[in-house]
Length: 463
Picture 1 (spheres, rainbow, N blue to C red):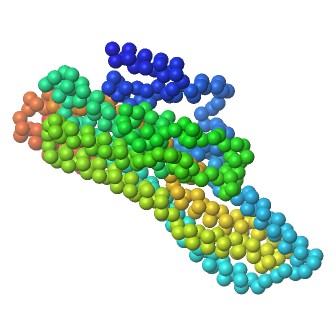
Picture 2 (cartoon, rainbow, N blue to C red; picture 1 turned 60 degrees about the vertical axis):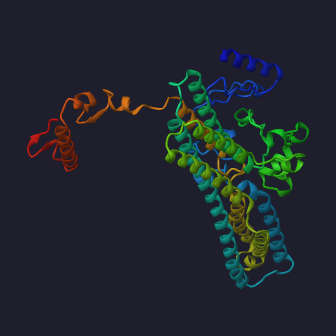
Picture 3 (cartoon, one colour; picture 1 turned 90 degrees about the vertical axis):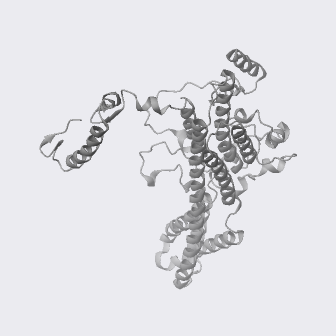
């Protein structure tokens, strides 16, 4: 009956042009269905799995699972070189102008001492900028690692330690099972919603999130308005400007939040509230038999709350704007002064020398700006989509099998406990013989590492 209802729901969704919604009460699975509006895949030419694909060069963030055979100095995807084209073009024209004036009109030369003094100051500023940005990047990765670890622990505690009351009533046990699957889905929904929040995507109607929380009452779900929430597709000029790193081509990342006419709430915290309510009901129903287990589950929920606070701290506490402006101004002053100081010694080589110097200095500063927010969609940002997909796969694997009964695992004939002897054969021996075998195993393992074989005191051990 449940399969029939689910199929009818999917057919109705197809007819209305909506993403299919799977009722958690009718299916014990967290697999998300692809949107029917995505369209069929276009046939492509066969390609070797290790070949270099053009589309990989435009994937944001960079796919860490893709292997490139190009040496690092030839790679473009993930490099700041595209963003340096416009600044380097300007610097090249500036260096050419100063060189031509100095060569044919009047020598525009300053002392090289200025190069040394300014270089020391610029080096300190860029070092501070880059180290601060990388520290934020590392903090972001640490908090997401904490999210992954806590999500696995919480899911394991729920799946193993929350009892399913099949013995009391079959329908009650089935409801407990579906409740546990729903809780695991909420754990995944928490990670996905946090990813969207950190990217200033405040709603609940996203392809990877809607089916997970469509049954919840949230501010983000109620605030969705197609008129104000729909984002216009980017033009080719805008995409090109963003690829070249032009600031006037970049949109305000908080545009969707500012355009909302309703309270957007805090979706990750709302999902945590539902998880807390689930734990409270399992405690009241006696499904968590131990207070230690309850304490561990509540500690996991508190840890997820810490992840929210930590990631928001990284996101909303950038380097003070005064530092950013001063470092940018000092860096550009130094680069603009380079041709005045290099012409006397290098002449026409001043032009390429200035471009190379500008690439080194401005490039390092650009890296600091890019990794300052590790949760965005730049090439070098954290691949949060991959992290969420990995967490979903892990939760699905965990939920694919019932909680193991260790008595059956221990008594299995395939359980080779020691010396290739299984549980049934060892169960026939006395306790003293088993302990003697354990002591002998210690000597055998030590002897095998020294190359003395499986014999102890010249005799082969038989257990």
